[in-house]
Image (tube, rainbow, N blue to C red; front, side, top):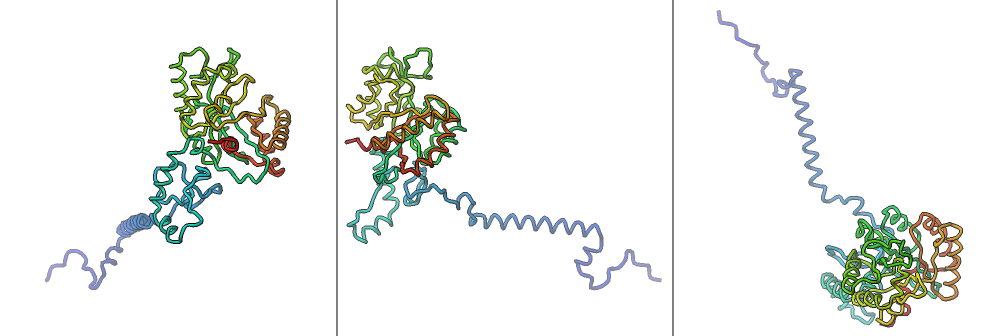
Length: 364
């Protein structure tokens, strides 16, 4: 008698799939394998198509964008594409109205050459032109330049200033922390930047800050401090004095400082912390774009008092055609400006950067 075959014979024609699914354990293993393969395939497909899907932040365009050159871009493949609301102002590379169609096509078809020309022109510009904020058409309207001093010590207040509904000029203290990033934030929001240079006040109990310019320093030390302050950040059009009621009255010391600023192509705004200040006169003598402060708006930090000063700013602008007002980043000042700026615009006042004001009288 033939011996019984060991093991159960598989039915003939049974598929491999049937054999795999014959056991519950095999089913579990099979499902896990399918899931792993599906997940890997999905990741692979995503990687393949990812370069063709732009991120939302790249696709979006800032509402403030104005057709202008970029703010010192690291790489600019197309110089005709708008990059920020801040411009190198009235000095772009332009195409003459009389240019032929062929010459226009040639310029547009050679963006690298155009970018090189624009960069060369900017390098030759003085700082007060190179870093000037965009000025809207004046149209014969009364002008107001709002300058906010003592900026940079608080990032939160820098943000609050940038949220105000009008163009400002912000004067940054050279010893503020994280300075360059705050400056770039303000520039990218279309505001203009100045350096708020610490100088010796009459009251010796008041500290103007580190590396302040004080009377009695040697000529060499005065130059060294001035240069250190001026080198503290980039992107500003000029300088105004922080305190300085004693130092700005010293014509000999101020002349040393003004010579350095003039050589750098900066403008000067005399904050007029004393009627004896020599700053404006010395700037004019050196052919620097220059101006003097008209009104302090928050010498008294009180909302009603600030509104009263702003009414004086309006009256000065109506009477003289332009008014320069200086304030500070106090919460009360920011709250008042938030309410007053839209109302002043409705009345017809135009808010401009300090470079626009100095350009009105500058002959160089």
